[in-house]
Length: 101
Image 1 (tube, rainbow, N blue to C red):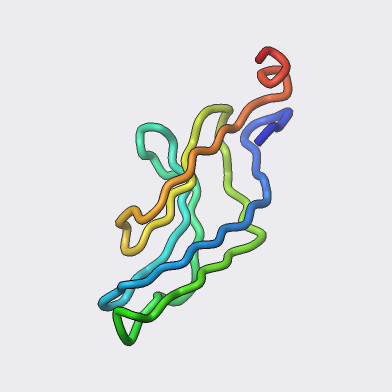
Image 2: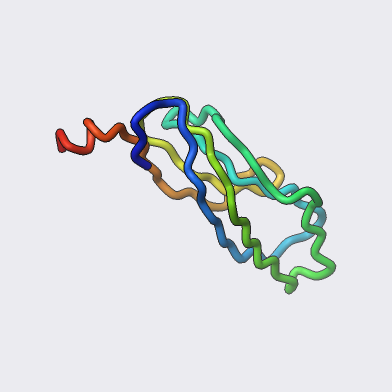
């Protein structure tokens, strides 16, 4: 993500396939910094409640706009009941930082 000013946001989309569940799961996508602090979160309104461990959830979230408080290195983290199930690195930079290398 490159922005002239921070804080800043950028539209993103997320896809994940979950399976093997037992119970009810609150699903969330979070933007975390390197220390694990959550700066933004979003997720489906209703929990995922698989009827069988063989059930799958194809989670597609579009038009997510994470809030980046400052330039830096972040992670997009997928959680189920606040337990991490996936993590993807994500960088936020100013245009001048990109030009510097």
